Length: 239
Image 1 (tube, rainbow, N blue to C red):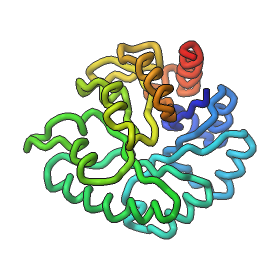
Image 2 (image 1 turned 135 degrees about the vertical axis):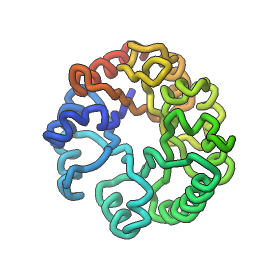
Image 3 (image 1 turned 90 degrees about the horizontal axis):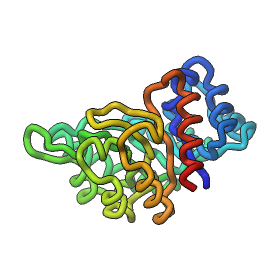
């Protein structure tokens, strides 16, 4: 099995030594990287780092404002590094007005990216599954009103009281990937196998649907690399 890692999991190392973080991810055994920033590296440097470590780019977590502020430059960078999945990690969707504005932006930029060979995706936290003060729930709105792809963060969905396996089935035709993740209700993230989220069931569903799995572990305890290794080793026990 091939597993990806969201490099935010090793942000403590990446902030000090970006190259070392990519190297460590490959050393652990991950086959794919999902970037969360590039720490000033050029496209050529990123490509060289990937090739050096024989690891692929799966996608990036990049805000929509990069597209708004410099669409051509942003697309050129992502194409140069070989990125096919441009995933928005978060956006304020706290009321009807913010949802409507975001839907409009997504519906503008998603086909523009598609024309360039890049898929536009959205990564959820818990809030997108919960009612806003005005009663709106943003994730179903994105499903119904846009053609955006989804990276379901299975822990945050679980934390919102949703069944992540059922959501994977419901969204199967729109899934770009999942974040396979563990933790405790209340929002306390943990390495895989250390929390109460239904990780094994999520894993089995991802295998069934042939959905790419990207690990994210958030607490860097004692280090992000240590948590990344714990997660990788746990996934191997599920194979």
